[in-house]
Image (cartoon, rainbow, N blue to C red; front, side, top):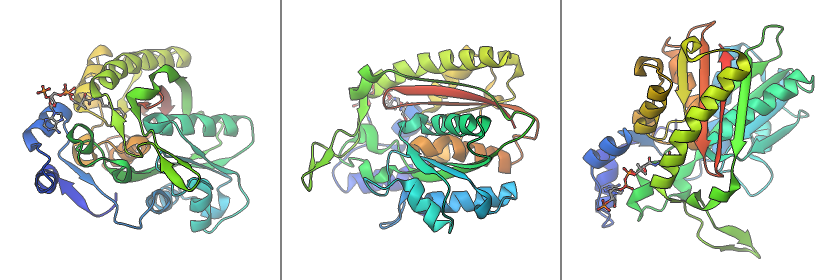
Length: 312
Ligand code: UT7
């Protein structure tokens, strides 16, 4: 997380000074969010991704030089091109391995993990660095209280290695592009200008309704693919957008909330970074232990959604 932390009270005061009215009570009651972090000016997704990558490499006991694939999931890249993954590769001081970004918004990390797993299984890579990194504060409209209180910045990373014992047991990815308009940043660069609105737009209720349905479907599908049942899940690490969506998913899967990793209260919604940040928090705090079965679930703009079941 970038160091600058804003509690709801900090954000409410800042917004009030610009004539935008909201409250800690509304934010907590509707979302479960209590704080978020914002990157300082000049800090990009690759910078946050670099810190997360270094920590992941240390945790895995892997040298940066041994990484032979980098995938960065982000919707807030440093530049239009090249990829944030290329920039990150250079910042890590390595060269030569394939690198690219995955753009699946808040489902980005489960998409990226699935692609890395497939490349490892086909022998195209053996040690992959998979990163979710975002600076969503850059695309927020701070005059729109329905969205600007929800998001934050951050990055998380994992190292995925080839092994005879499968870590990733199954993946299930989906998208339906007819819902593009319910969650988007519609602006684009053209002829040296930004055309259209470059700030985040969301129909919160439409996203909420879709999210609750598809997260249940993806969870059941990935369990079926792996030959497992809900009872086999030790931990659910869902996309951290809204505590109410997480509660609803847990209820549908008959999982107690004690098995659901929740960091949305401290991070807000960090899009593609939210799952690896939550995973990192649960691993480092000793919640998730070696050998446990973990389900990761993402949902977001596109509309995209998916789940990964893994043996930690
Ligand atoms: O990461 C991708 C996935 N994204 C998501 O999963 C987000 C999904 N959606 C949600 O989490 C929820 O829909 C929100 C948290 C965005 C909104 O919660 P809601 O319960 O659906 O609220 P609402 O949009 O129905 O708004 C209720 C009221 C409205 O006032 P009226 O029309 O009832 O008078 C809003 O104008 O709350 C008002 N409101 C606010 N009030 C104070 C909306 N935003 C705020 C705010 N502070 N920040």
